[in-house]
Image (cartoon, rainbow, N blue to C red; front, top):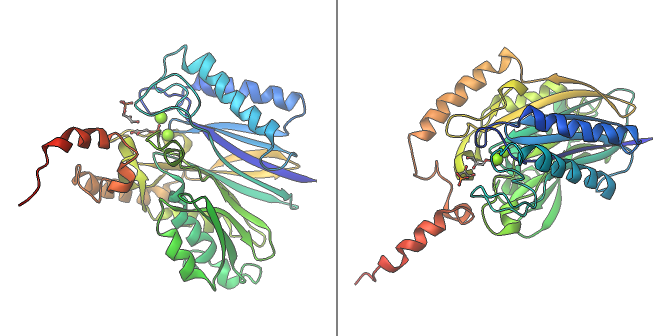
Length: 365
Ligand code: 13P
Ligand code: 13P
Ligand code: MG
Ligand code: MG
């Protein structure tokens, strides 16, 4: 029987500004998903948070884009918003949902979704990633390195099953188009797209035999809404081992703290910090941006785990490096390239400030 893994997230309000999800929000989400297990709608679930984003990991047999499953996630976010976030006056209650709470971010958004359906292998290790204070393009660099760079993934050279490479389906989030490129032969074309992280976003990665290997959320809500509505803190699911990259090869790509968009007011670049669940809470300048990695074994759709994979001194050096880079970036204050460029700033509150100056400009003679 095929299993579907759905990772659906939303920021529905948080404790002390955009810092963390409150334990009562997690509890309310768990209660609702528990009922769905009891009625047989879903097989299993795990609720967690990365910073202020509430993450619902759900397994079931209904395939991708299933209205019942998406409805369950939506209702869960609504229940948490109405029964916990609003009564407790948490910050930006219902931020990513249709809501009447105002936070400086405009309401009217949908949650982020990463899903994949597959035949469960005799042993099925998966890793789910969730990030805060960044955007879907943040996964472009590490996922490219995991599935296409032999200096990251030894299996691409050593293991005949990986040696053929992988296919990347990339979305153009500005135009609503998609393209699939094969690696290694189209690697340079792929990189020509993936380097533009705000526009081209990895959606799915397949083995050359068509086995689904990775799935990412791709929503750029500001592009849909046409204005700043909170960063689309992304999620991603990766299958590992037995013909796919090893767990350690997947994690290796996060040892380099690359710069991502989304720090402070969704308007700055900062290094992505791999952290444990307990450290998944942004502080300095509302950051630096963070990512958690949870490992699970699937057992007939049941989730065995998690293993909190970045909860390891092996990533201390990366975290130190992050703080060094964060410090350096902050010294730029409001200057590019620490602050995002004008195209991205279109979706923030900056245009309101510039509008005020409009009439002060004179023609240069
Ligand atoms: P507000 O303080 O107006 O919510 O804006 C700042 C911020 O945190 C942007 O999300
Ligand atoms: P979130 O997108 O995580 O809600 O953060 C908003 C923000 O701009 C914090 O500075
Ligand atoms: Mg928030
Ligand atoms: Mg967030």
